[in-house]
Image 1: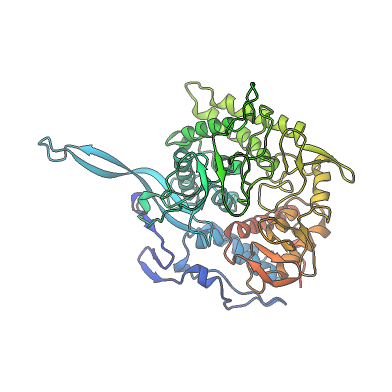
Image 2: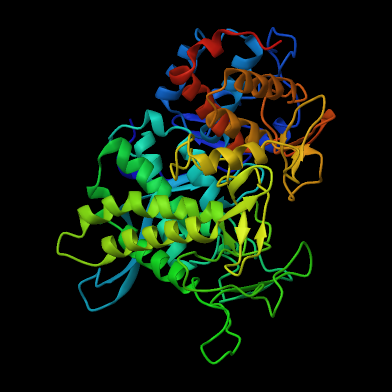
Length: 529
């Protein structure tokens, strides 16, 4: 076991240092583009995609033990290979750096009045988690990537543990939020000494942010909700509430509340003047908000919080993005319990969190439910508060399909069931179907491309054995022999797909398999050839 302060590890994508071992490792983006033996023994002959042990970026004995246990639970060899490759992907490939925060301190170190500034390490753990093929840390992605292992979390003070990894991610996310609360993806921290490049491009964004610290500054409500989700995942599993009072968590939550509240504003003042939002965004390519980078007019003060971008990073049509508001409402309420435990001297943040959560829920149920001629009352994907609605869904979580997974509502809720039936049908404009697989697609990719992530979410929100079995069969046969989930796959050709290294979707698949072991264990005894 390493001493706690000695884990300051930079894991570049070519050279990986582990205790007593120096291993030359290939870039995983190159490794992931090729197939590797041993292949699975089933019909689909799936590649083995895990890097060798010395090239894995984080070793968790609990994960290894769980994989070995599932080896004797999952009967189908191709389904097991898909689980074996996918679930550990985040730990195997995306923990780019771990270490401790540093602070500058001026001291008279010589005792003669000479002031010297020293850089000192603190006990604040930091974990820099990249998405996979993009070398940056998204608040949303990293929180969801780590959630794949939340079921294994236990209280552990060691920085070498899963708990230490979670603590480091929470601390680093808090720092990012305090630095640039409207931004969604960030570059490596100073302490890592990882070289950074400017992220400046032709986008026009206010307020200003540091291009050498921020990778992408798109205001996505689900990003700050993901920070709260990650916090709740850690607290619920470990009971370690003391941690949240140690560093910057409380300050980050206060910034989140102020930022979210600023985005509940009306588009017009009482005198009829057009009002600018605190955040504005324009981009010359890929869609951009209209009206001087503010977006279309929105009715303010209705409980809902505006989000300029979706979890796909695409611009919203209407900025009251219902799935993101669902997630934010639920995570505010859940993490308010953490705040209540650390506001020992009193304070208004706990009540503010609960009140905002309640206001958002009321706004969703009042303005986010629309009447569909075929399906009845359903949740819209986006609304503007004036009656306009975008009726669709996107595979990226949060989505309408994922509402029970987010714990916003139950899977048996009438409005959710109506919404689910429409989302998983050809009446959803972004549903794709074909001989390879069928499911929800995204405006982020071309029409006709199914996102495996959406099939995984279909499994996680289903009690129908037939539906679950179909989704598993589609997933197993749609990897083009690589044995990992891609971002999207052409419904008519398994050989046409995007992103060979997409850690979040793979971790989510692992969650679904572990969930099935509890809810539907007989399904894992089936064959999917």
